[in-house]
Image 1: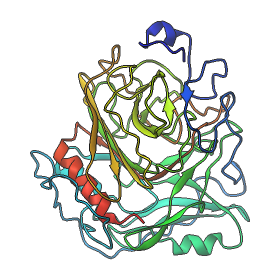
Image 2 (image 1 turned 45 degrees about the vertical axis):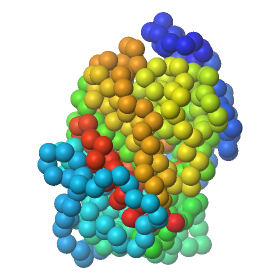
Image 3 (image 1 turned 120 degrees about the vertical axis):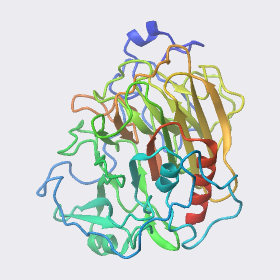
Image 4 (image 1 turned 90 degrees about the vertical axis):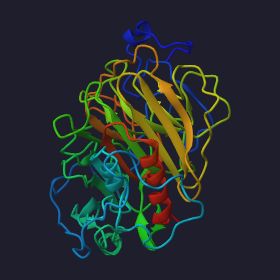
Length: 420
């Protein structure tokens, strides 16, 4: 990306790319890379596990998940506007506090229902008692679904530990908890074919505690990425408003393109300004002029990572090097968008930006795919591989423009989940 102060369609016409799919494009400035992506051609498959093998990617045992626990109690916002709770509380949450209400219950109560909800660590609805993700082991290519311990609770990691004992495992798919079927398969699978350098993430790189239980993260390294075409299954398209959040890591990050979660191209190409609407969390300084080394919450709107309403550096941006980070993006699709971030263990959210969309990005032209771990123009069979590193614990996409009260309640809920 040429480092001009304003992004223009002239530059866009040159086909500048956010991934190794376009090795001739000038890359954005990377600051303080941790784990280092290769600037030119993407890293080799770092996730282990063959992309093909004995078992088909769609197969495997289903654990089913524990069925105890009742329905969710709405708890959060009234139908008119956001959650009843004010600013985020301090102090790390613990145990099963707020277990009967999940993040997507709060979005629903605020009038902005989740159309996609993904996590390897917990249920995102109070009533959800199903599967979270699937692992595949190297010894025989068998697969197993990992579910929650109870409705609204954390992941049940014991079956994974038993299944993967004496061998290695990868995460092949993150299941959508929203009921829309927006499951995220790894790029390079039978379901989402990818480049030879694309592979699934290792399943046991990082364990942590959520609600007092051992769980595993989705630990993305260069070469790992997940994707779904959701344009017919509820994901907002065109100029429709949407809100997004994820819990990620401020420690396992780099400056490679592009650790994203959100709305992306169905073509897996860098099609045009506004074709994406995804949270980016990284040390990337796309347009130059950044203050510090990050990592920052930015908006990947295609043809650039935006720290605010233009290619100029946003002085209200704030590095978030916390162990666990809440990252939020919302976009009304026509006039404004907002970025927020905070410590996922304590404290309130910081509003990093809320204002006009960048020039040439109104109206938005979202295509309705979902990407996790890479930019939107990654990782086609004839293309490159993801260059970024990052960690994904949970996240969701909501239809509509969530209000601040809903997002404050969301932060409270994340803290109460007790990330340790």
